[in-house]
Image (cartoon, rainbow, N blue to C red; front, side, top):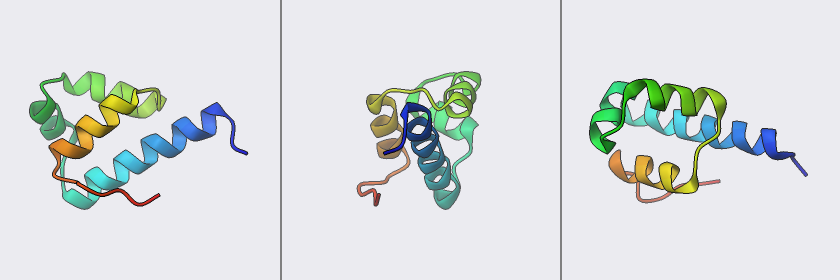
Length: 68
């Protein structure tokens, strides 16, 4: 079973992939969720963010389904 770091990496990669598929930049996501772009970059580079942030981001880009 993957360890914590591997799960964090998977979550960050999943969100990055969905942003790319939707054509949404970090700056655009920042505007959509009222967050600073640098904070989003840091969260995605570290991979440490809450499930709430993940759901908020996915909803903001119009994603209603996520395939694991």
